[in-house]
Length: 127
Image (cartoon, rainbow, N blue to C red; front, side):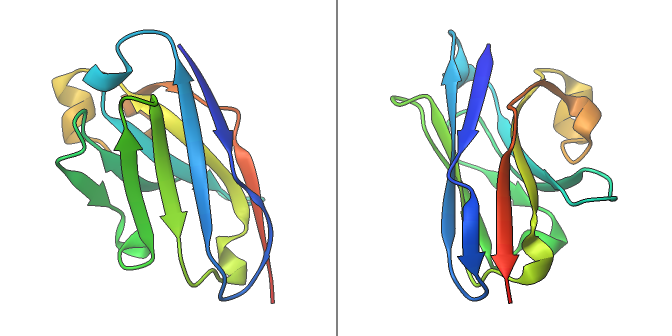
């Protein structure tokens, strides 16, 4: 399984971005997916996760309202839309595949619940 994140870049505060994460390999549509971010000097932060068929999504409190996760199983792609960007959103954004276990389903907000990671895409928000 390989995950390729894209869509990051330099954007002004107040703008929007849609990040994409393209998956290769089989069984994409049987796994939940997630997005995290990591700012310089900070720990990796959970943002959102979406289940295998896109019917349910969960968000970190910090992501509710401005972040939207979605997926297209036909395209083997998961998306993260970010609106009203702020300078504090500056970070490397990572997509990841959530492991198929009860632990991972329960602790969906922990990086250890994810078994495959993309390389990250940098989002820089200027004020």
